[in-house]
Image 1 (tube, rainbow, N blue to C red):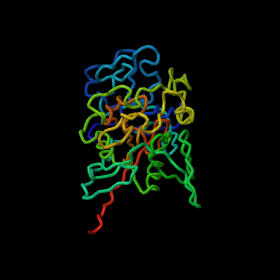
Image 2: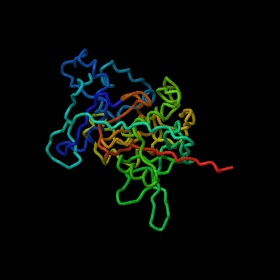
Image 3: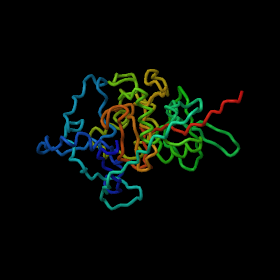
Image 4: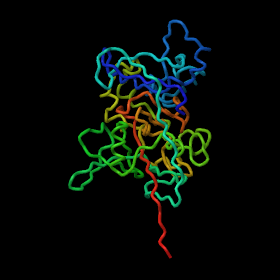
Length: 346
C-alpha cells in the first residue's frame, strides 16, 4: 500500500492561515495515472481530492438529490486530479509555526510495519480479538478515561479536543461514543497507558478485511448503511460558509465539540451491528478515521461521510497530515502483542 504515490504538505501560517490545510488527504494520488488523459478545462482551476478531506456538500440523498459519480482521474467535484507527484500549495500553518508563506513538499513516506509471526497458544484480553495468533486488536473504536495519581479514572468527554497536560488511558467498549478530535501522538500515548500500542498500517488492514480478505470486511461490495458511512456534513450545517470556501474555517472550527453531536454524524461503538467480520471487530469502515503507528501520519478506514475517496473501505488511507493533526473525524483503536496461554500441567 505504501508503494502508491502520496504527497505530504506541511501547513503554513500566512494569509488565510489555518484553512486547516483544507484538511488535506492522500487523495491527491487517486486516479493520477489518468489525469494526463483528461486535461483540466480552461478557466477552471484543478482541485486535488486531497484538499477535500471533509466534503462540505451533504451526502447523497439528504438534499433530495444524488451527487454524480466523478470521472476516472477526476476529483469528486469534477475537476481533474493533479499529475502524480504534484500538488497545490495551500496556505496554512506548519508544525513549527513558520510564517514563510510557502508550502513544503516532502518525498512520500510511509511506514507500513510488518505482520508479526504467529504465536502458539496466543491469548488476547477480553476487549480485544485474536487475529490469526499474530496480534490482538480492540474490538471497538477506543474512548478515553482520564487517570489520576490516586487511582481514580473518569471518562473523558468524547466531543471536543483532547487537552494536553492530562493523563489518559484508552478503553475499548461497546455502545459508547468513541473519542474523536485526537491526534496520532495522543492516541499512541493513550494506547501505551493501556499496555497496548497503535496498530501498524498492515495490521490494521488485515484486521479490517477479515480472514476472507474482502474490501469492506463484511464483503467485497459496499452495502449502504451497513456501517456508519452515509452521514450528513456537520461542517456545512454549523459553518455554511465552507460551501463557498474552506479558507473561511480553521482548526478551531474543525475541532468544534458540536460537530459530532449533530444527527447523522458519530455513532456509538458497535451500534451498526453488521459492520463487522469473522474476526469480530466493529466499525473499522466508517464512523471515525483511525490512526495507525506510522510516525509520518496515516489514518485509515474512512469516516461517517466518506469511505471511498482515498480507497474503498479497508483500503482507505490518508497520509497527508502530520502525526500531531486532529479534527472531528480522527479516532483510533489499539493493538497489542498476544500473551501466551500456558495450560496447567495435568
